[in-house]
Length: 335
Ligand SMILES: NC(=O)c1ccc[n+]([C@@H]2O[C@H](COP(=O)([O-])OP(=O)(O)OC[C@H]3O[C@@H](n4cnc5c(N)ncnc54)[C@H](OP(=O)(O)O)[C@@H]3O)[C@@H](O)[C@H]2O)c1
Image 1 (spheres, protein in one colour):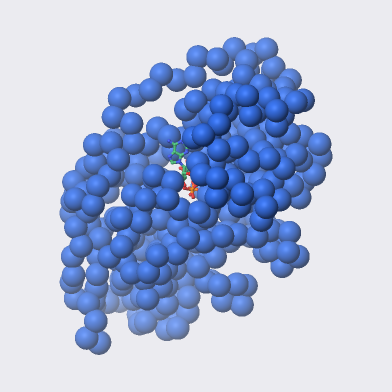
Image 2 (cartoon, helix red, strand yellow; image 1 turned 60 degrees about the vertical axis):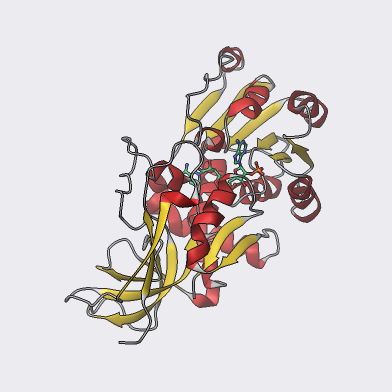
């Protein structure tokens, strides 16, 4: 078809602790040829997300592991170059799980057509995609915010956290975010309008929470777990709601950490702690996307993307994201 090759990032080894570049291999192959019913997509943008770390392990989870030698799993958005199915046409933009590769032959299942008129196409894997929807349903459905509630969000400057905080502000809440650098703290307060930012790596988190939340905490949107979560739980109010969205502080530990031993605070506060997966809300994605895009158009919702060029840079960028090097949604611009 053309002289280009398919560049693929494969899982080479299962990481112990934080992944290293040696856990990945870059391979080149011919661009796939299609069978009847398939389409060929050229990847424009690849999303890098914390959940991918779990797929590198060989353990039973809510989704299958990536096998050694297989293309790394990942959400992406791309352009259809060839189609042997009546359901998709050449030139259409689609979003789906094509993996870390520059081309993919797909059978059309699980793909969403992207309307480029709604915004930059990469937003379909960011604020108008999985992370944005996670923020939307995790906050509104799991945490049920009310005006005047005090909301704390961990990993507050990231793909999910930055959206949660702004929706909480739209809902009339007081919003506190924890982040790992002063730059991230300035970003959530100065650019996104959070009321307070706490640098959990520099500050005494308990003392800072006491000062930021003098009336206690009504909602905790937890992306990280660990000691930040322990400190938040000690300060929850009666009837508090805690959404366990993720536990990124635990994804790379080699020995399991002790879980929180302060859960009696939930009993005393008659509080709710609930884990959720965004996929459970699939039937309501249209509702979430239409409200998120309305808020973006109205200027109520901003978003920051952390863009790195070139699929060969995906491993180091992914490792960097797990170490907090990203500010905003981590994306690879593939072509
Ligand atoms: N439940 C679901 O369906 C669902 C869907 C999407 C995402 N998630 C979860 O949501 C969370 C956020 O995902 P995201 O895509 O928005 O990622 P992200 O926040 O854009 O990037 C990950 C961030 O995690 C923070 N981090 C890394 N190690 C940490 C540690 N030891 N302690 C505290 N923070 C640490 C870093 O920020 P700092 O510099 O602030 O440390 C890093 O920037 C993850 O836990 C992810 O698994 C869940």
